[in-house]
Image (cartoon, rainbow over all chains, first blue to last red; front, side, top):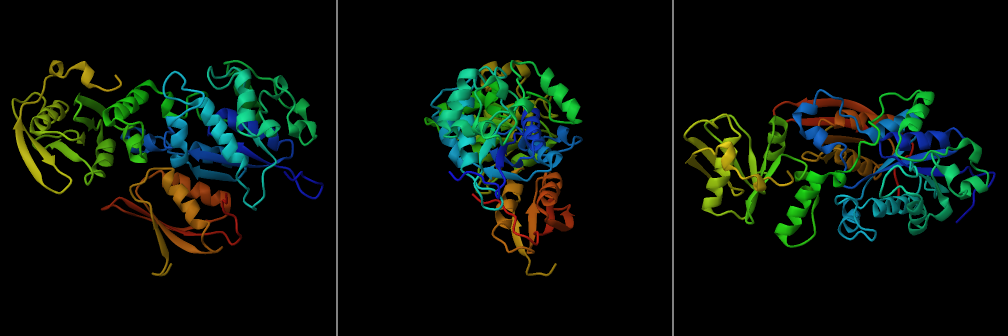
Length: 356
Length: 86
């Protein structure tokens, strides 16, 4: 690659998740006079955005995008890149396997570092090196001393990957050896403790940052991973589309049998969101009482629709009535009403609940 | 903004997709172009202004149709080329 000269400033690309570590790592490099742009990858599994927007109970909070917020705090420009399609291969075929759930963290980091270094900046120039907020020992699967070398090597970044928060615990990277970055001004954080990062954040005056180590990916979540397993098992193939993985974030999921499952809204925000799928799924609500909307994913028969309606009624205001009117709407516009008896709590088997 | 303003419809998409679509759309436009962004996710009230501040774009006007829950944002792109390329 072209080496920076005195007439061409060094330029770095920082992976910005929206969390504290990438905020600090980028700040450390900016403070050394390096020109930095940020990149945030949208995989479809991001905790950011989606569910925050869907659920009504979040609406009193600021629905900020933390990656954008971090970039603004740092005064850098941010690329937000849709990698939903490319990312499928990482989720479906992780070379290094999964973590505790369906999180392919190591393959994910390799993918993102490689992808970032293959981008060009807003002026069309290549980046000289990449910056991440990784810390040795921070995460049991992906952030260990051994995995740091794997990420550098398999991403193709090699010594063009700099981890400012733990650089002193690692061999000097190209930016350090070339003198673009002063190694003495980097850090030697290690382990799971967040105190060093929080102390550094306080020194920089950063407040109101996203909660540390809160996890930014639904694939680390056990319930979510169970729903994804169920999706793959039922369809008989490991694949997904964006709508599939978004819907796994919404509502209660119940599967009475292999033919279908219900996605049952938990509140008004989810109700409104699920209404948007009326042309793709059968929808059930309780016409005679206030209650949730449910989508039916699969190929239910008449008995299935009756059982599904009784489940929906269980979560409606008519749950204690002997009979309520369930309304079933089909994607082609056909609609029918059914008089049904709501299930009582004990009539809904625990194993119908996916991921609980 | 006149009636010939080009429109980017992101209704039904959840954040950050409206922002990503706006970003990718804007990079195909000449500097100083106008476009109308339609969105249904209120997350755009944060995302789009932040993105505009970052890249020098300008939000000319914002309206929300209460009937359809569609947010309309008229955006003027920066006068200098400054868009994501890959």
